Length: 389
Image (cartoon, rainbow, N blue to C red; front, side, top):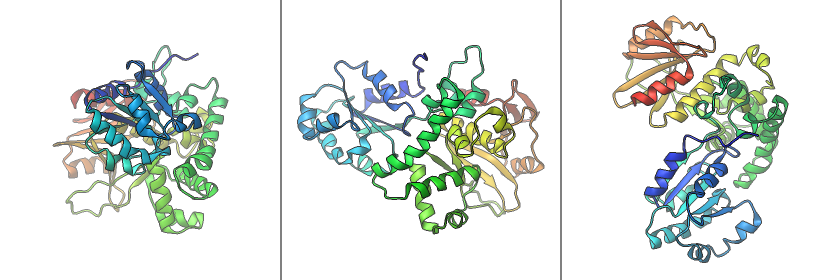
C-alpha cells in the first residue's frame, strides 16, 4: 500500500481558496486532481463534492441555483466541470450574491481554451492552476533514487505506483485507448478515434523534433488543417507540449516552427513500445526522451518563466532558454552521465550574450564545464532556480 503523496500544488490551491471566490485545478485525466481536491475539502467543514461523471451527482444540478443556495456557506467541489460548461453563468451569479472567498473548487480535464465559458464568465472571480502527473520533487526518495523509474513509467499515479512494470504498461496502454474512444467524444469532438490515436503515435516518433504539420498530414493521409486541429486538441488536453522558438533581433535565420513533445514520458514510451530500462537505453529516442522528461519537470516547477528553444537554419541549437525579467538561462539536456556539448552551443551562448548556462544530465554530482556553465542533475537545477527566483 502506498500512502498519500503530497502535491506541490496543495499550498497554492489552499491560498487561492482563501483569496478568491473560486479556484480551478486543471490537468489531464487521472493525474490526481480528485485526490488532491478530496484532501483539501477535508479542511472545510461540510464541504460538498460532486463528480459530474456520476449520473446521480449530475442530477443534483438539474436546478443548480437551488442546489447552490441550499449549500450556501459550504465549499462546493465540482469535478470534471467540462461535462457541464453551461453552469458557469450560475456560478457567477452565486459568487457575486454571496460575496465571499472559497465558495467553489472546480476541477477540469481540459484547458481554459476548451472550457471557454469559464474564462469568459468567471473573469476576476477564479484563479487557475495546473496539476501535472507526479513530478520528481514530489516523490519520497526513501532508500532508492526515483528518477529513472519516474522517467520510464511517467508520472500518472496509477502508472508510477503500479505493483509491477507489467501492470504499469497495461494501465498506460488502456489510458491511451480510452482517451480517444471516450474522452475526446465527451469534449464534443467528432474526430475518428483510430486516426487520432495513429496521429499521437506519430507524435511519439517525432518527440523533441520540429513540428512539421504537412509531413505529419502526408503520413496520415489528411490535410494540414486537420493535423493542426489534432495538435491543438492534444495540447489543450495536456497530452502534448509545443515549445516555441526563440525570437531575437539577430542576423541569423532562425527556425519558426515549434518543437513537439509528448508531455508524459511514460505515455511516450508506451506509444513507442518501450517497456523496460534496457529497451529505453537501446532506443533511438533515449536522448530526446530525457530531454522531454527533464523539460516537463522544469517547466512545471517554473511556470513564471518564459520558455523557448534556439535553433538556426544551419543547425546551431540550445534546447531551452528560460527568461524572466533581465535574466536569461540556457539549458542543454544530455542523457549521458559524462555529457559533452557541441561547439555550436558555446558559439550560441556568446552570440546571445547568455552568461548563465547548465547542462542537465543524470549525474550524481555537479561540476563546472567553463565559467558560467555547469553540469547539474535535474533536482539540483530545479532547486537552484527555485531558490534564486
